[in-house]
Amino acid sequence: DYNVEILVPNGASPETFEPTMKDLMALNDAEQIFSVGLINFEQSLVGSVKESDRIVNLSDGIELLAGSCSHCNHAHAHGIDPHVWTSPRALKRMAENVGLAMQGVAPDSIKYRDNTDKLLRKLSNLDSLCNSEIVANGVDAIMIYHPAFTYYAKDYGIEQISVEQDGKEPSPRQLTALVERAREHNISKLLIQPQYSKDKLRALAAECGAEIVEIDPLSEDIIGEIERVTMIICREDE
Image (cartoon, rainbow, N blue to C red):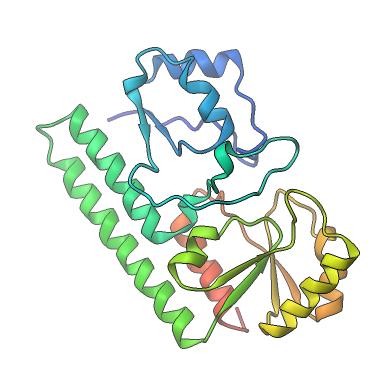
C-alpha cells in the first residue's frame, strides 16, 4: 500500500548519521514516520517535521535501560541505551506500535491487524527459541565490542560484557580484566559489528583463545540475525 523508505543508508551507522536537507524534505512528504525515538539524529528531527503527530515512536511502552555507548562525539540521548530492536520481546512491542499506527491510518482494514498478529506469532517463536537455547546451554554472558545487546541480555538473564569502554578502546588494565572475565564465563566467541574493524579484538582474542565472530544488529532481517546470534553464543559449532 505504501513505499517504505529507509532514512539511514545500508551500511551506515545510525549513531553517526546526519540527515541532509533532501532527507528532511522527504520526511515532510511522508504519511507516517517510524522512529526508534532514542537516537540523537531522530531527536533533532522532531522539531523539523511538520505535523509531528505523523511520527510514531516505536519504543513506546518498552522499559528503557540505561546505557553508555557513545562514540565519535555522538552520545545517546539522556544516557538511554537505544538498541531495543535486538530483543525479541521489545520487537514485539515495536510491532504492536506499528500495527496500531497503521490501524489508525486505515481503521476499516483487517489486513494490518492480521499481519500484525502474524508478525507477533513469529516473534513469540523467536523469543521461545532464544530462551530455550540459552537455558539449555547454560549461557550466562556474552562479550561484544559495542554493547548492542543490552535488552536481549536483560530479557534472557545473561550479562553483556562490553569491550568498548564509554566509546573508547579498553586500557591495558581494562584489557586484562576482560581476559579474566572471558575465562570466568568460558566465552569462546567475541562478537563484533561490521561497522568496526576486527583488529580491535585481535589482542583480546589471542589472550583468551576466543574466536572473533561478526554479527550485524542493523541487519534488515533482524529476526534471522537474532536467531543466528543465539546459535553463535549457544553452540560451539555455529
